[in-house]
Each structure stands twice: as structure tokens, then as C-alpha cells.
Image (cartoon, rainbow, N blue to C red):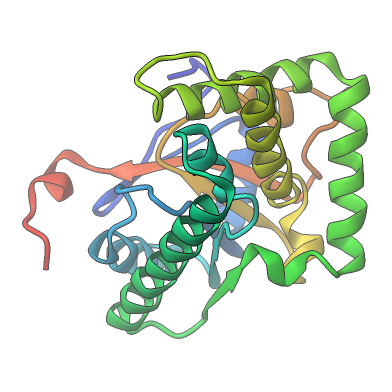
Amino acid sequence: MSETLLSTTLDEFQAFPYSERCRRVFARGDHLLIGVSPGNSYFSADRITRLVHWGREFFDTVDVVHADLHVDAQFGAQGYPPDAARRRAAKEVKATRRRIERGVSEAGRPGVRTYPLSEFTGGEAYRRLHAAVLDALVADRPLREAVERMACDFLRARLGGAAPAAEHLAAAIRYIAAELPFFLDTPALLGVPSSVACYHLELPLTGVLFGRSDGLHAAPGQGYAVVRPTAAAADRPAA
């Protein structure tokens, strides 16, 4: 963990806003964004239920957004032919959507919305932010290197440590680039006053987007926090 992470224990999850500014955004309690990736076993329906329930205790609204763009990249890297990769990706996205719907329903809390990432691609705010990401991948070396490292790690984990082919790495970069608008300015995308994006790990991009004032970086109302189960919560059996 980065030394700049600030620990705040709240019931069954422990939150680590990345910086002092992120902690101030967190303390406002306007909005929590939960991003879910297909094929990620961490986000079981029970985990989503608990995370949504916890989030609504401390935030006015909670949104869950799941990736459904460029998901076939990971299966193509594993050797699936293009058509098979697309079918497998569609199956994984559908299963992810079902887990989210079940988890949110069982949380039984108002003020929670769910979206596929593709729902935003036609909007002006998303197009503007995504274009900024694509420009930065060319001109912003720290961001480009962080995205490449993240994409490579993502694929290596699915290839038994082997280096991915160049075309698969490029596809994984497109997958990450599609998600980055939500780490830059969720308030512009969802119409909330401020927002905290959460994940259970610190990502290679965290320091780039939230730890500098030059280059591509998060908007003032955008925060980031590592949110993970406390030891006691992790030991509880699933519902």
C-alpha cells in the first residue's frame, strides 16, 4: 500500500482514501461508484450486497457500473478465436450483470443504480473524457506507462505469466481506456456533486490520476479509495 493511503475503518469494510483531497471528497458522502469487471471472482453477489449496504450507510447514492466493452480481449489473449472470444465475453458480461442485480436486490437499499459501461458511450461527457484519455495515451508518458503496465499485468495473470502478444496488449489498453472516464470525472457522467471510485486494490494508475496536478488527472470532485473487507467481515460465511 502507498504511504499516502489514509485508513478509515467503517463497520465491515475498511476505506483508504488515496490522499487528503480524496479523504475530503469521501467525507462529503455524496456518491460511491463501484466498478465491477467480468470474470473477477472478488465481486460475488454476496460481496456486492455487503458493499452496497455499507456504501448506503455512508453515501447519499451508490452506483454500480460493470464493464461490457472490449471484454473479448482477455479471451482472445488466451487463444480463443474471435467468434468464440466474443461469445465467451457475452456470457461473462451476462453473468456479471446477474450477480450485480442479485447483490443490489438483496441489499434492499434505495438510492442504488446499475449501469453497463456501454450506456455512457454516446454521451457528451463520456466522449470528451474518453478523447482526453486517448490523447494522453499518446502524449502523457507517465499515464501511458501506467496503463501499459496495468494491461500487461491483467493479461499475464490469464496467461500463466507469459508475455501477451502486441495486438492483445493493445486490446487490453482499449479496455482500460474505456473505463478511465469514471476515474477522471464521475460527477460529470452521473450528475452527482462529488464521487468516490472504489476498488479493493490500489491500481498502478492511482498515483497518476490522483497524485499529481499536471498531465491527465482527476477532477476536483473525484476521489479514489481502496475499500476492502475488515478481517472480521472477511471471516464471515457468505449469505
